[in-house]
Image 1 (tube, rainbow, N blue to C red):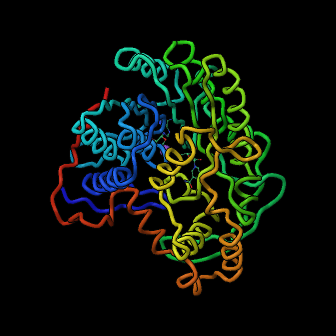
Image 2 (cartoon, rainbow, N blue to C red):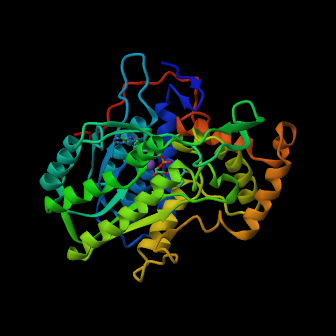
Image 3 (cartoon, rainbow, N blue to C red):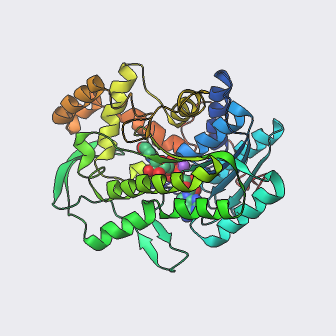
Amino acid sequence: MIIEPKIRGFICLTAHPEGCKQNVLNQIAYVKSKKAIDGAKKVLVIGASTGFGLASRITSAFGSGAATIGVYFEKPPAEGKTASAGWYNTAAFEAQAQEAGLYAKSINGDAFSDEIKQKTIDLIKADLGQVDLIIYSLASPRRTNPKTGVTHNSVIKPIGEVFTNKTVDFHTGVVSEISINPATEEEIANTVAVMGGEDWKFWIDDLKAAGVLADGAITVAYSYIGPEVTERVYSKGTIGKAKKDLENASKQINDSLAAIGGKALISVNKALVTQASSAIPVIPLYISLLYKVMKQEGIHEGCIEQIERLFQERLYTGGEIPTDAEGRVRVDDWEMRDDVQAQVAKLWLEADTESLVELGDLKGYKTDFLNLFGFDVPGVNYQDDVNELVAIPGLV
Ligand code: NAD
Ligand code: NA
């Protein structure tokens, strides 16, 4: 079939297998262009099909020659209906990995459930024995707690008072003012239940109890902080509470891993266009201004550049892992540079519908958004008939 983007708000209902494949090939080529990383050899990535998780899987496999197991929740294709992008990404990655002689298998299902955790443990036991790196990179709007059966929905809201600021509809370029009502206590608790650290703890507890964590294993979860302009809706809002909870979980997990000489870490990454971040109000305007400034400064990075740098220059240098005063690994250092933030803050005040065309990188935003679904990728012929029924080689 010929596949076109079908965009509804913050999502695209279709995905292009060839475009997704090309994105994966580009990421693999990037990692291969860098020097080899003396990293983990058996890696589990939870949230492995898109964004930072996919980049982590690619960096592990093609940077360190690692065997990888990926866990994700993606929609398979059906006759005349495309799969979700993460399905096609995974299909392309596993084909490339297996061709390169690297073990690559995956599990599609709800990572929050006990069933998928058990299935993952069984697969590790059967094929790898143990893992030495566990990347936790889930982004989800809801979670059913397997212990209580309760389904929690997250909200992106400020805490305490109404938040009013600018935002942009990145499809139309219209800048408008948005007011978001503060979250209720219940909404805060639900957001923490979804995006906080409880599930990460459940994962590591189960993996440890099953004896599938190698001595010295490390686990890394991804977080975001960001600047003052977004703090009321991000770091000091409901999602920020959840990220605080994730940080607290890292300390508990760290204590529990001490027995095997292991470590739990938070890596604070930069703001990027992903399916998760497009849905957060105010953030797309911030990202479009940030992209403009970082590209001008020659320090722009996508997911793969961020994660390759995380592995190469933070996690696997052979020495101590550098952290901030709170013990967090930082690869948002270039985003948070004083000169970068000063420029973004200035542009923020000036940005309106007319001026954003010049001041911001809306074009880069839109391209990145389409790229997430395999569209607008250079080198792909979108007029071609393609087979939507792509299989994932290592799907268990
Ligand atoms: P993403 O939406 O690209 O990836 C989410 C992944 O989670 C996908 O692989 C998806 O299949 C998987 N997933 C979601 N629900 C699942 C479920 N129930 N079971 C199994 N898999 C499930 O998101 P991302 O932007 O890469 O975010 C990953 C992490 O990085 C998040 O913790 C996010 O907060 C953090 N982060 C994001 C940014 C950003 O700007 N995008 C910046 C810093 C940190
Ligand atoms: Na991810």
